[in-house]
Image 1: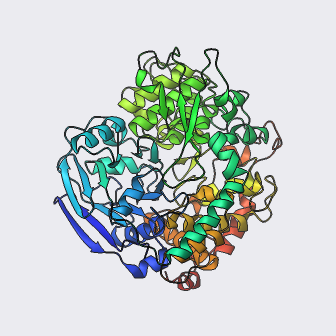
Image 2: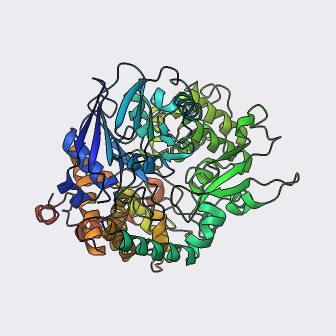
Image 3: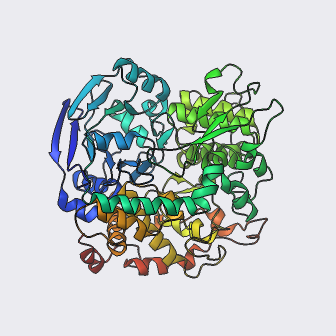
Length: 614
């Protein structure tokens, strides 16, 4: 039960849609969503395939708990070989789209080939149909979703689509569902665009069967009570969203600023969660209210309003109020990392990313790298079409965001991502990322465990593959010293394995601020066939991690790619508690390899693969 037990295979080249039974042997080994989709991808594509070729595949998948009564059960994933990284890519998104897919009776949709013309998939329960998308090609995510709902005369349809960046092949384009929820990283939107697939629209009302209904509902009741009573999931996230972290991370000296040249931002308080609550002179606030994805009792989503007279919105009234307001990563990437402390400007830039389907982390980090090159004289206004790309220039930031969306002028260069951009202009050392993916909002000189997390992440630099910030800063599940390296290899490994299993269940990783893996396993056990415990879930996560690692090795990555930029390894933090410190990756990495059961080059040993049935 809980699994729908079937997948839809869409051959875009031939224009066919075929139902297949889900491989249940794999489901018991990989659970669902991230794990199960990755297993299908690994089995069906050549790891060295060009991500933008028809031979690459794009998989949308749910977990067994997606769409159920469990809290935060709105998650689904998009899995492919990433255009930004060339590594295995699995981007997780919330909202309502995943629930709709599951209620239409599907665990997974596999897209293969390339359509000769733009199309979208319309899936109504058991009835799939590929429909001409000519009317929507060249339009934004927001206009596409509105148009498809109007065409089918059903406002309850759930839509996931790409905007102009996905069509143009911007290497960090994302897929947006429900207007502001995104499968955001690694360029999954570019892969979708390469297949001439504009959107996926789903309407489902078949319901989901549970193995032990009464037992499941009891575990759900207990789980929701735990979330409500926890200070992070019951108070901090509902009130401030992830933006609760801005001032906290700045205070401990781990807020990357001006392309990681600094680790504290003097303007952090101006773009923080607290600032979003402040009443303006006209009596309004940036933050209107919070909102929630399907089934979520945390409700960390932001709904924001831009000041009406601000320069960014004078001619853009559609942006004055919108859901998908600033979260911590958006605010950092478009704010502190570019030196901009204008709350309205970065809110506007974030809205544009939602409207058009662009990863704000990679966008902000790439613009930040360009700003450093501008200040170093590597590029000038002749390169940037007159835009002053100086750190702290809010108007220049907004102009470059819009140029990137349109693929115009220097915006086309920004669309390459920071590694390719910096290499093109002869300054590769200004790229701040791992495996071509830009860093999120934590400076690993001030949070040592995050350096190891970034370096070993299978999808390139990512905080959501192993969020050691929970332990090193927030003290969850226990407090560790962010400036110490001892024990961090084990911490990273267990966070990576646990996160892989949570991602595969169909639940949100934010629940783990309050829940243990046992709390999640009890819900999976009641909903699904088989015996599921915290230990078996952890083994599933370890199997997934090693499988992803094998794919990347076969794709051409090596242990040499498990590293950080020289800036973090050699240039000490200038201020704050981490002053004088660099990231000590060299101390942590050998121990991590040993704990993983990998050799000195980061290759899984034979007995490790045998133990995990790989």
